[in-house]
Image (cartoon, rainbow, N blue to C red; front, side, top):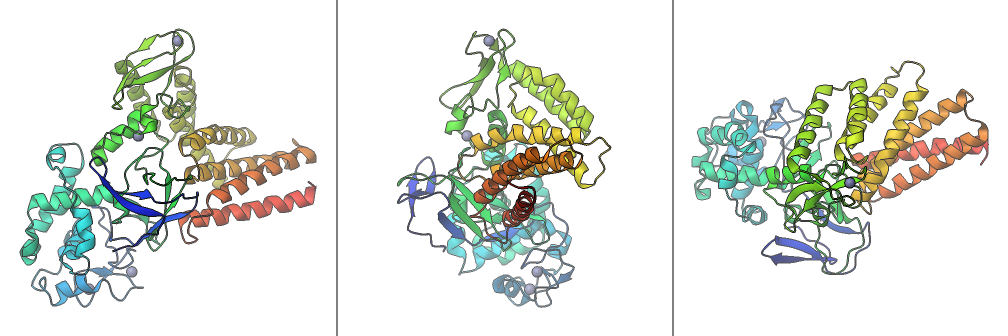
Length: 488
Ligand SMILES: [Zn+2]
Ligand SMILES: [Zn+2]
Ligand SMILES: [Zn+2]
Ligand SMILES: [Zn+2]
């Protein structure tokens, strides 16, 4: 069982179940929890064999058990799971169960953890939480996928008979699949592929759309949870399971689908979404902004203008959102189409509306890719300036929706930094900027880089964010040396 530090303690209540609360005052950046994963598994639909030990691509099978894949770097995997097929209860099973149905890998690993006396207790915390299968059986999405890729192949391969004490039925297996899905964090293997990591204590963190912690995951799949904002004794430790750049209706839809959760957090109950107006529309009558009316249970109603009281029905708003949504899909990465969408829908929505932000992010990333490949036609200063503008539009929203230490904001700052430096270097080279103006821009860039690095300083070195911090630090060195050269 994982131990946690003395700054948090366990709590239990009806609504949240088992969870963690601060036991003393905690500073931003302070570590709250460090945990090794109970289980790291490929996605159900993964067909590429992955090493049972390090989860990188694999083309050979463990010579001892002849069931689990291994890679060239790993000579063995978990002793219990290897032994189970080498000479234990699973010895007589067909050796190609994973080769034929790699989708079962994650669940197979969980079943063996449940069978292993040393890991049973850790698993109990996870599987002790009841799942109402009726909520999932006929719903959208996951049930059918679980049935075809995992449950049926597992029921048919004979494994169930080798694990009699677990009394496995197809319903039990479905519940396990749902637990793995709804409790997993996205972790990244060394080869860059994403995987599902399940953490026993991590799984107990309740959701809040404005989390008070940051989850850091390193290349060995270890989790470190640290405080994003100051915490007081008794504060519940929250994590977020949605994308903060989604609007309330989108986040709630996603939470319903993935976790059967009706969120009533402060952001979900706030029609302005922390002052960002990410779901607000332009009022057709007075030019102000219509906000969604939300009841105390978080149920979204119609949109109303607080100034002139004009009404926009929920149906009208949903229709508009669906229209923009499908136009976004149809845009298929075409820069001109995205710009035309901004021109068309910009006047109907608040400038921070989540769909405009989505379009802007799309444009910014196309422009970034074009800059990387040097494929921009001349004159590109105009496009670089556009990228700077889009990146800076996103910053205040990122800042507002994830307060405190925020990876999202750090990444936003980094994108802005790259765009800005590229633009001003070119402008200076082509004499559009004089030395004094160039130096002023470099000073701004230096402040942006410093702020971004500051936000990433609690991330592990061997993580994607750790590498990003190195990249920003190199950029900062370059900026500082230019500042020295051209005078401060
Ligand atoms: Zn390996
Ligand atoms: Zn083996
Ligand atoms: Zn919420
Ligand atoms: Zn109005």
